[in-house]
Length: 118
Image 1 (cartoon, helix red, strand yellow):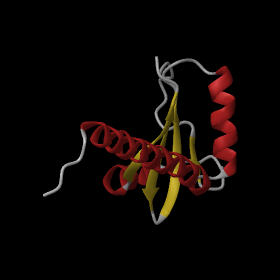
Image 2 (cartoon, rainbow, N blue to C red):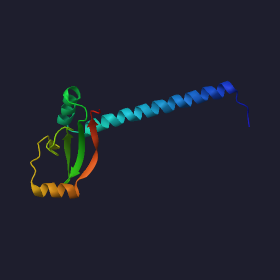
Image 3 (cartoon, rainbow, N blue to C red):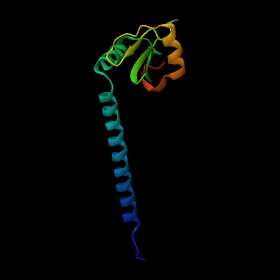
Image 4 (cartoon, rainbow, N blue to C red):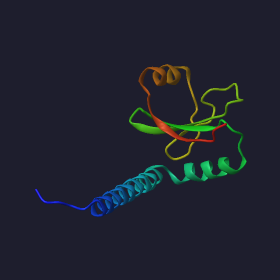
């Protein structure tokens, strides 16, 4: 075994930490870009508008249902659930009682896309 001075070991630790930090930062940035690319443009426009004008507590959730993606915009002061529910193309969904039952049984919540926080 050979001897490595304390100064060289500290320099190597700093170098490793620096590369680890850069790797973590680059991965998180690419994830945001991938998320943005995976969502429809109309939704990003709506989120930008809500960022500037909406009340705290607003949120957007992504669901997969009937083989397609849907987006629910939640308003915490609204008494209406799923009133702002849109398909991937941004068309507001018109609910029937059969759809509500099917959605409750078969829809999968994918993720929270955005929230305004309190």
